[in-house]
Length: 170
Image (cartoon, rainbow, N blue to C red; front, side):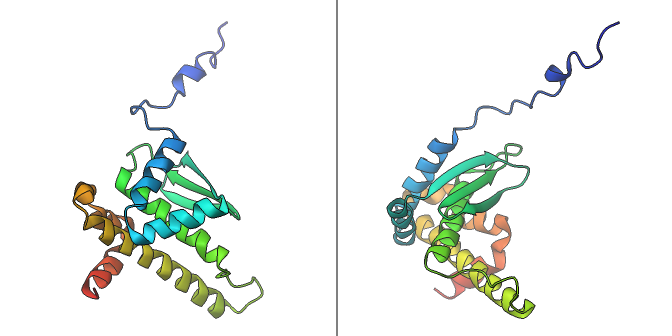
């Protein structure tokens, strides 16, 4: 009698969607892109001075997480693949979040009133999104990054209203 699970490894193989660059190469590329604008350069400088470790992992949804002080993870999708421009913006966002923590701008405590927790969380998120919008705008102004359509990527990330408000107030 044959084992029905004998071929499970071949059945459960991940779908090959083409080779994605390795995590360190992606991070290096994104940091190089961010160095081309003033705000991005500042974030990269702080990350390098503080020795932050940035890793990339494949996740079902794009996400960013600070797992510990100076330990940043960017989760990217393989199907459909996260575009390079969006990866740059995701990295910029997690760098800003980590910089907020480094500057002492932390979440409210668990015992603080719910209204205070929400206020601080919204303030931190708004600051991060403003940074993402500013970086997208600054890079979009440079001819070598026009094809990345970074402003469109910000909108595709769900920040259309924030991007429009940012551009209106320039």
